[in-house]
Image (cartoon, rainbow, N blue to C red; front, side, top):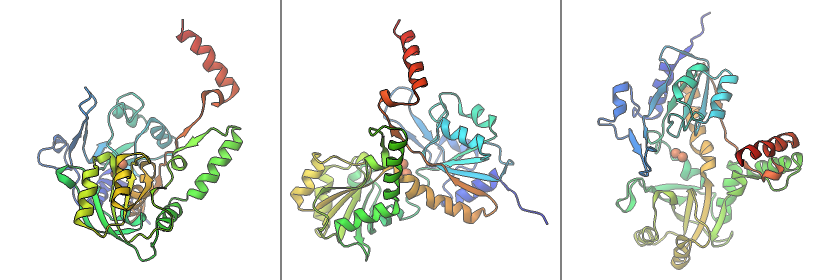
Length: 336
Ligand SMILES: [Fe+2]
Ligand SMILES: [Fe+2]
């Protein structure tokens, strides 16, 4: 009995199906002629721009793929994990770049060393499923990708799902989907094991929060936006004017703090404001739907999720006594 073995070309084709045909199929197309999904991301810092080239970035199309990883942001730790665990290809959501994604060295040589194919699919994947609204408890009736004429300023206006009636329901729903109780006990376990109560971890440090309103306030009609994309207080006033029934603003991916003008504006408009999931949970929101779709299209491939878990530790408590002693000794060379 012969078993079908998937190749890098099959993975590219599956990913292209998932991204509605938006991927680059030929290397020449990476220069962006005509594709709106080949995008330069720049804040005009000299030498720091990156071009998103959705599709295969490194690897030969004929290479077999037995094991595939889905990740958000490629790092040297991920390349090492892939190499050590026999991963043949990794699909990253955020754009990859030489050195930035590969521990300060050119990406191709490092990926080739472990025979790892690398794909990316970012803007080409965005908007392909309604999960970010769903996970926050609503169904969009309006989706804008350039609200107020600002490209990338994504905004949803949505009606809450049947089971979501209050601010508390939104917060509890996010906790359930993101397994925050277990994340919290895992952090407690780590603090105990490492004998350091000062360790922080992203998911818990930025867990969902009520910025304005109370748990019992009713939620029916929401505006949902992402503060890092440029949404302003004028935009909030404008959308409330266009949809007077809006009773709640949800921010996610990024968030604002309690004293931010957007929170003050929500208060002035008499609406609730909720900070939902952070960018650290996009692996659940976008990574998991992509991984399940890939599994459906490539049943012969084993699929893993590469999840990042970032912690902060004061230097006085970081690592073993031996490595702290090492750190102090070496630092004396730096100060000569
Ligand atoms: Fe994304
Ligand atoms: Fe993202």
